[in-house]
Image 1 (tube, rainbow over the protein chains, first blue to last red):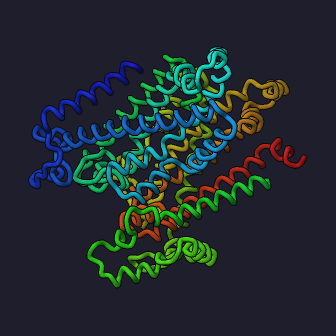
Image 2: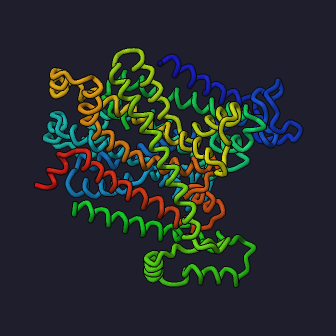
Image 3: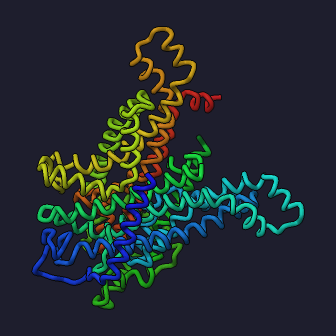
Length: 266
Length: 305
């Protein structure tokens, strides 16, 4: 499990870096090789504009990685802050903050993201904005629950009794105990953000042409499926291998860090 | 039930406000975005007048609610068709698709879950669990094209896309149904395993009931509650999945209409679609609550008391 996950992730990372170093041109149009089958010149074939699919898959992977990491960091920061405040102070602050998260939770995240992206207009920045706006909620929920129970721990009470400031308690005494559960949640969320990014790009709301993204490529591939079935197969297998590897990595971390399976049962 | 209803009303009101504000959240001038740079000043003014954007916000909201109450969802700015007419064909198509995939999800998911639970610890259980866990992690926009590739392109059994033939619905419904069935398999397995060790199951077996009867009438019935909850919770992602699946398979439902309207920047249509999807979600949740009551006598009696 661990070996598979690390191998696949390592492979993609190396491939993306190699693609950068070799300076593959994923946006070069070559009308002589439109929808060409895999060959020595184009290992994975070419797309509907004769662009090299391999180069575009790698560029798409890169974009996917970057979006996932940025969105994961931003959503985690917002979510953990909200969760810590709500869980630590309780009372009115908790009520207000949780009311807000409830409103967000009332609708499926991707649907909200579609609505946001529709309003903000397509593009990578707006895409990330839409994903951030909807993604922080699960972190907030998770952190709040944990913080509430950690708040009653003796070391927290002890710190409080010797007059430690709330901020210090939250950052030094509660947050470190949350780190393992957050690492696991963040790993899973990388996969779900990649899926969300690809979904929005698939719908034409994410990364815009001519730049490559797996969602948009899959959409084009579906259009030319009858003529060039290898296109959809390559993008599909790429996507599956990456998502699978990340989720297996998450499972591994979860077992390793010994966290109750409640996270995975969403 | 009263508080539930009040909650529902506040959610519906929130949805109405949000969809109303949708057009106002557009960065810049929505009229300019919709018509493009080439539109003449008179065209712009006409559209502004038509959408009522030149009136105060509160008046606009009042008009919006009033129109809704009269079944007027606005009209498309490109084709000038009233949105309600578009909905008359689009909405049933979406419902048909969602309903069929729900059935597929249940028909595949529940028996597989029961099977896995009965074989718990054996290799059959492991295979079913692994497949269902991995399948549920895959997005519909991956599963859809893959199914299309295998069954429509390679095997040629089913139409690729569109909705001309009666068999056209099979692939999109399978796409949506598989994901749901994977989640149901896992839930059924877990929930059934918990119940199987209970005293009443031992009693049922001790009094000599057939194993089928023990599982179906006694165990599965008790295990049904968490399953219903999950189905209800999953309806949200099913709705979102509908949007993408309809786009993949050119299925003319609300989801595809939503995507098309976003592409064309046809905001009145987008607004109406978002409203329709959100309201459907609210209604489904209410419906889940009702089913919950039917399935679990405890909930019913707690209410009556």
